[in-house]
Image 1 (cartoon, rainbow, N blue to C red):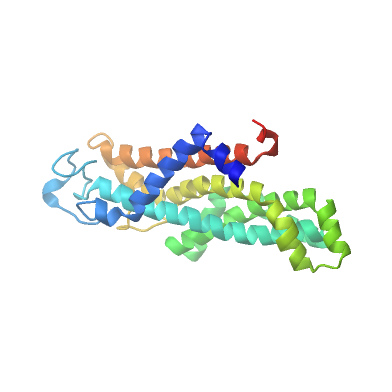
Image 2 (tube, rainbow, N blue to C red; image 1 turned 30 degrees about the vertical axis):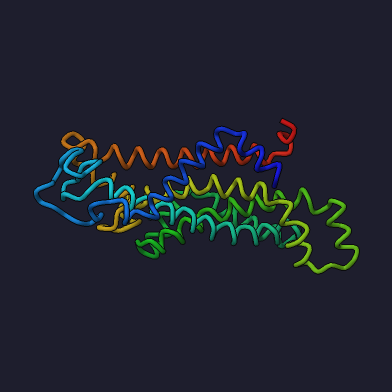
Length: 277
């Protein structure tokens, strides 16, 4: 950990992206204290005005403050991204550990099931799940988690296959250690690097999927703010009020890019081939 911290603060990409993500998360967390207007407060006298009169990013067609809605939309998107990835990581890790460690028929059954999920494009699979269970925040989290489970399962399985025949694992097997102890104490701590990298980079995909579902009207339902929903509403006013679409697109793009770059930086920091650099 000491080496990781030292190399982390030497990596400019990791520092910049983590600072930006921390800023976004703090803004979303403390949104009620940072905005002057609520995200759903409508003012007929303030419809479609640009920056000014206390509206940092202007207002939309209902007179709602764009800055407030962007911050509250960040709260929704980041919560959906982190919670869905956490859920899929837990399920995918368990399945990957079982498939990789036991192998044979169990491995074949689990991985063939994962191949079925891989046969569908992610957004189409998420659309099918949300259309089946209905829209809403919890349903969106569940849909995105199901879509990401095969990715974590395959990642963990591959990592388990690379370490399960190493000496320290075979020593635990030889002394009669329980399967749970071998998986939790010997294997899992030594495969957390690819798992952490995959989880970090999956959050950006989860945020993008949530925005796509909300854009299509199957994700977060109005009047609750979400980046995808704001972009969908702004389509009709692109020429009249371009700030309505510019701000949510800019913040969403910057957030997704930051998560991707942060994941790349963490991957380089955890890669043993870069330890001496």
